[in-house]
Amino acid sequence: MAEEDVRQALRTDARLVVVEAPAGCGKTYQAAAYAQWWAEHREGRTLILTHTHAACDVFREQTSAIRTRTHVTTIDGFVTQIASCYHETLGLPPDVARWAHDAGEDGFEQVAYHVERLLLGSSAFRAAVIARYPNIVCDEHQDTNAAQHQIVMLLIEAGAKVRVFGDPSQAIYAKRVPARAAHRQRWQTLVERADHVEDLDFPHRWRRGSMALGEWALLARRALADGSPVDLRGARPEGLTVIEADNVGHHAQFRLNREGSRVWRAVDTDQTLMVLSPTSALVAGINGYLRRTLPIWEGHRRSSLDALVRACEASSGNAAALAVAVRAFIEGTVTGFTSSIAQRFEHEVATSAGGRCRGMPLELQTMARLLLDYPDHRGVSRSIRHLKEALGHCDAMSDIKINMQREFNEACRLDEFEGAAAGHAELTRRRTMAKTFMPRRLISTVHKAKGLEVANVLLMPCDATTFAGSEYKRCLLYVALTRATNSLTLVVSRERPSPLFLL
Image (tube, rainbow, N blue to C red; front, side, top):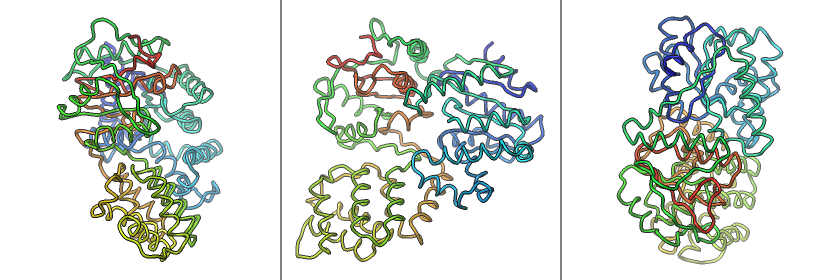
């Protein structure tokens, strides 16, 4: 009856309905079905706010029949659109998205704060937003920051019908204890204020795979939420495999000390596979360990490119400073570009690329000359592009491998535009508008895999470092455990066991 209760609650005239549901239990289906019902029975458009561009793709596909009555966007995109229209009132530049990128990690949070102030101070503006979007669906609301949450609350107060879907056990975008406490408090306040609070608990995601694995995932969620470990002892559900092995690699390397052959068999035999790990550094290390047989899933964000563009804007005309930025970008997107290679490149820039050389030094010298001839985004782009070309013919550079192919390619295209910021904005726009196609086999961080599902998942390493006992790590582990529909393989450590597993 839970699903029927949810369906009916969503279709009432209540202003605020909150639906809490574990991963894979039908939140997206219920939200899309509700938007369809609204389009058939009510006036006005539905605004669907998500937190990831992958989720936008899913909602757009499921609401394609009512696209003229539905607007799907990220909540960052929504507040940026408002801020762009009222940038003078808010004291922001016309290109708000660029300003947010330049502001760093909390740039879009600052934009949300400005829009919150605008809504708070103008009832007319709140009414205008609701006139355009009388019905609002908030997906994965547990991931909102304080300003985003307050924007939603202000729209509820102004008369919008708001339907909130979320799962506190999947809150993985706040790491610090105070921030997580604030997240919990906002969710609790939302629940207390809601006219209806409903739950979903049927593991739909696993219907065509292993239902036993889906039921186990629900039990794992309950244990992690209660502060208990996930019990891997005794009989395991169909589709769950545990491999005991430790990562003995040093620094950024990844290498398993035993049972590595079982990992390789999974990689070699599964035609559909997602290899998951908690951090980008581990993903890069695992990529090397698996001999780059799987592409890295890059998602939508381009953090290294963002930093490169900021450097181009700040250091135009300064070849030495741009060389440092190029080095940082390369080190963030490739492996094998060692410190000695990077130092030789910077030396060539500092010495005006003089002297005769051949082999890899010649390629680095060519990169430096491009930067010296064009000490702006054009030289940066051409220098990076030359590195890519050199990898195809210079044997001495065979150990250098590009990990982040899409991000690297976008950097190579910056010289097509009048300025770095303009190029960055256009490339971001194209990336946002393009439908994301996920390869059948890939490596990803847990964060970038959120909202995705595949048949087979390999999660490693599961040790005391990667999955410590904090609430944040519990949520991160739960998200990782719920990506697989058919089979989930955990590579766990005996020497440094994670407190989140009971072995």
